[in-house]
Image (cartoon, rainbow, N blue to C red; front, top):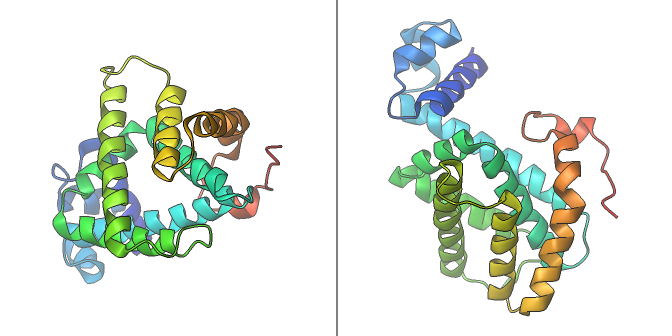
Length: 219
């Protein structure tokens, strides 16, 4: 029943938003009672926190999957940015859900620390980065990307989604000291390699995508 509650809550969060979703909505959709729901979760925020944790764990698997295709740090980072931006650009409701969830101070802090821990666990990330450096970098990326994706989905930004992805890859690679021309070439390479293959992976709809799909060689 816990899984049914989580599934029902996520569907409502995506469709109605977190604030507009009630516990009654969730339990009706899940086919259970308020009492049974409270056995698993003390309130709506507890359900939200569980969903966010599941998303973080799934995102970690996706990052490792994409990054493993490349030996150099620049392309690993570029592929991770491609993955994240593509998923949010293709699913504006998911982007809105994450943005709304991050307005909660406790969720935002929890997610930031989890992502800092995740990013610093990769061997290709500079180990000299302080936690504060990492937190600032993550929050800068999150706030800027969420805002631009929201504006893009509303039609305020008139461009192709690949142009947005290219910009973010170049921006972050240049912040890491990679020259303008090289960062542009890497961005072009990553977008070209993954544009068609991303859809075939169906990674955004399938929790078991790693086990079910063989690694497609982007070369």
